[in-house]
Image (cartoon, rainbow, N blue to C red; front, side):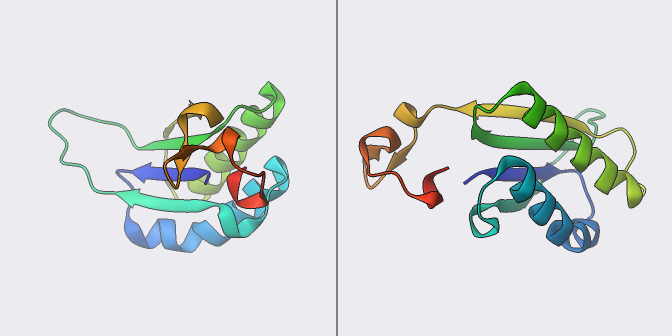
Length: 113
């Protein structure tokens, strides 16, 4: 956790850009690289859908969210991916469960950030 989910992108591009995104994301958010998850989701487009990046994470300061979105936009643009939609899905520690218990009820670890 956090999860960065890419939709509509070519797999080879995401594989190439992932190491840089993970490094920069972990620096911006101030979390260990090992806990950043990147996924490429397969979607069957029914209508014309844009490339998109969904970022599932806990709430941070607006400046951090802005910096993350700007960095991801710059990185995928470097690979010719134009006009991706980037948005955050903000998670709540009380509604995120590990071992059947809310995250805010478990001892805090770096893997829970």
